[in-house]
Length: 246
Ligand code: ZN
Image 1 (cartoon, rainbow, N blue to C red):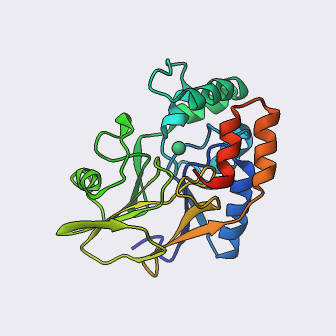
Image 2: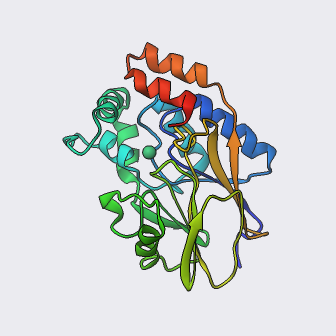
């Protein structure tokens, strides 16, 4: 056994929200977190892509997977599949990032192992198709491709956990005990744009010694993040939704 005893903060859907990321990092430090990993969508929607990209890169290194916003901000592909609001911010973000930053986004893999766990943005079932996992049926499709016990994901911005012990069960979680021989597909929620009706930033701590995953919610300076979105001329809805967590 190597690297046991580590506490990981698993961050997802940071979406260029510096105020939320700073609050989450302070909370993680207070919880004794030693390592960081990210399930993708470092950029998009909010107004601080450069700072957030640099911070995630510094803390997580290559323990980061590619999200759909990361992908479309890294390449000049047409944005046909995107909601107009999201597409506007992707175009703006492309103009903010330099070649080195876009190159780093292009280097991110769709899925990867870290220590003993896996990470993917959407689902291990065709990760480049950016499928959403909200229910047991969608989780079952993922589990067919999940060979390890624990896999973390994001994309939906809704923190839910699925467990496969013969049948698949799933739902909300606060603290999850990982049981040997079972599989877990765990959404860590969104740091920068929560959509479960709770506007607080979300992330998870994986205590690898205790085999426990804990969901954390953290208050942050929402008004500060909103002011920057408006100042940058990004869509008003990107600002207003932060206050309601939708
Ligand atoms: Zn996202």
